[in-house]
Image (cartoon, rainbow, N blue to C red; front, top):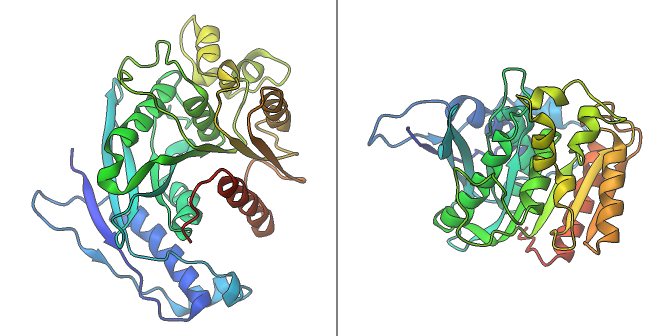
Length: 336
């Protein structure tokens, strides 16, 4: 397995609003086209220096003011396709995005991206990188249709968390300030990964040898109760595709966030549209009602008329403002 490493640094040529545009486009181009390149052993990967078309940038930033234009505060090192575990489907990999100008470990988000779409994952961690955090994007076992394989995907997510805890300092990842996050199925994985305290039958590939606890969870419209979408009032066709074999119901209970709800859960903030046609908004309502009753620190950000993602710029800004406030209140260092 070749771990591919390269460095990301933009030419900031067009002023403050364009910094954001170039930074974002460079980053996506890097993740989509540079990371998949294969470098032979001993070959130093190239420094990525991209100049993005002034016309393209101008079109995308015409309505953005300089005061509203964030950017990555320092160059990044991106380690792509780092294997963290293997199963019958082959090695599972993660990508590490770390700032180069600081030897002090930084707060880190571990993001589980639904569908394992590399470009979407890059966009999902971008707000954290702009805050000066480091980030890890985790790929996990999925079926050809794009839905997770259960319980393999949950086993993967637990292995990824354990890998970061054991190896993170080498990459500047602060294991005392780990936030797990994800969208849709990735949100479900983030919840289960953070809420579970005992790994009953889920630690076969990654036996736990120390207590693993995260600082907080940022859940984007994840499923709270897998049985509900598999056979309950909110049954969804996609849920049956997560599980194989005659023990599907037992497996759903074993990997469902609902199973692990309790007073020891870490702080959890959820973002959910109240018109979500895929994961019922009711799931986040039930999750946060139960968390409040258990005495767990929690917050629910409701996106009015929001669907399953695809939120507007203003809706995303509202959501992230709430996320930063929530994390800062939990004592997590907001470096930028």
